[in-house]
Amino acid sequence: MLGTDWQVRLGPLNTAAGRVTLRPIRSRDARQWSRLRLLNRAELEPWEPSGATDWQRRHAVSAWPALCASLKSQARSGTLVPLVIEVDGAYAGQITIGNIARGQLQSAWVGYWVDRSVTGRGVATTAVALAVDHGFIGLGLHRVEATVRPENVASRAVLAQSGFREEGRLKRYLHVDGLWRDHLLVALTAEEVVDSMVARVVRSGRAWF
View 1 (cartoon, rainbow, N blue to C red):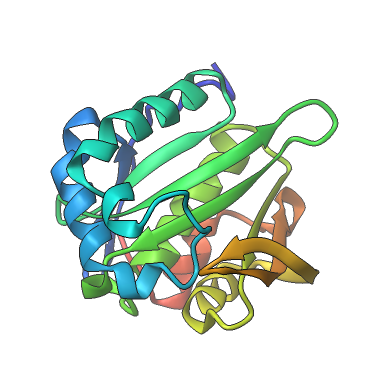
View 2: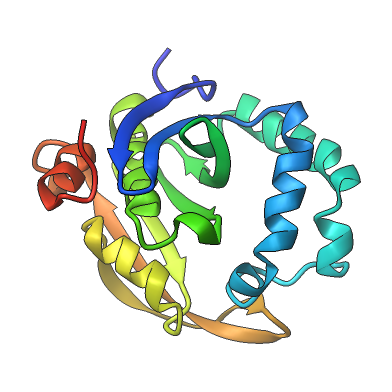
C-alpha cells in the first residue's frame, strides 16, 4: 500500500566505488554498524547531533538492538524509512527518510552517512537519489528536505548535486559537537524532479545502470 511499505530494496546502481543498493536495517547489522560508526568517528561526530553518552558507548555492538527496535517501531508507524547503504553487498552506511508527515504537508527529511572508504565516489549521491525517488514515488511525498552545517562542504556538495536548493539558515538549530550550531535548510519538491532523481544522477555520470 502506498506510503506504508518501509521494507523496500532500492537499486542497484553502479558507481565508481561499486554497486549501490539500499535495503532495510536488520537486527544482525549490529557488528557492521558498530565497526563503521567507531571507525568513522572523526568524519561523523562533527556533523551529528550530540548524544547523552560518549561516542564509544552510543556505538557499541550492545547499543544496536535498542536503536534498531526503535527505528523499526517508527517505521511500522509510518513515520520513518531506515535503510542500509550497501556497496557490492557490504554495509557502507545508512540513509533515512524521517519525520514523514501526511495530510496537507506530505513531507519528510532525508539524512545519511557513508563509510570514509567510499566517500567522493558517487555513493552518497546515488543513495540520496534512490531514497528521494522512493519518497516521491513510493511514499507519495510532495517535499523532501535536509539540514546541513554550512561548514560541511562534502555533504553540501552531495545535496547540491542531487538538486536540493537552499531555502535559508536556521540559527543555532541543533546541538552538535558541544555547541548549538547553525544549519542550512535545503529542500526539493516533486514538481522540481523532471523525470526521476536516478535519471538525474545517471545523466551526471556519477552512477550508471
